[in-house]
Image (tube, rainbow, N blue to C red):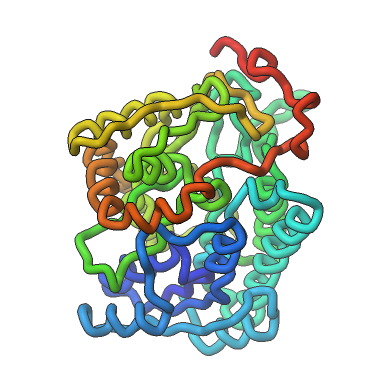
Length: 401
């Protein structure tokens, strides 16, 4: 299968390029390296050093004997995107080229506008390029479980759609979205645009509502092939951030009371799920939704798992509650279906302890590098503009599950 990865330089993008190439697929991709500049803007860097893309491709070719094709281009350039898709002639396109940060989108009006415009424009450009140059290709768009919101409905979240009765007739409609940031709303808008493109042009698409991915790698590999590992407040996912804090002796910071629940999956599981979606495409004109996670965890429970992992290697790890910069419920029930990928053969690894141990082992040699950017571990972006007198109390955000 010929797979084009938009956003190939990122945490998931570079991992997926390697994973698919190792699986015998022909891989191409594109990136403008904006993630590197966004993280630098936050005063941070990848905890694990990474090479520029030419060095990554050279190292992979030397080790594995295959070299993915690569275009350095801005996905907001519609002509460049169309030309790359036409040149590669993909069977599938994976869209990982959006700005993936809620805090970054909440910084100010300029960042909110940029995230919304970037994420919608890149999606439109890929849709039009596929319509014109690869109409039979399958789009796998990375969405997020955050599109649904967390804890606002005391019922299991289905995979994208819900059946309702209206005036005595059954109807299948999109499950209501309750996104919690400008970034998450950009993903909602993108999902609706992809769905419309399938109806309008007969494209085929799978929308992956992915949980929070964690971990440093999906297999043993040398440093030249490493994927990036972010830990700043905007681009570092919570469990990865906890591991970096543990590695340098900083407290694990829980926002508010810390009982938010989220779906999580290891990096290797994310790769397996994406390949399952790619190799089992929908019909022409079909838009489908997969919820992609291995397990739902309470953030306080995860912090204690990281503390235990630190104890096992002689680290002194503490846990600290800090004021929550976000407007979110901190104690809530949370259930979600994820049957579609399991029906295709996904078996969640559920090796949380092993993944955390391996991640800590990979981070400890880079503790000095993380420590240089320790300030980036702590939140500075508030959802309500930093006006403390407008922040809701913990009691207002919490309710009994």
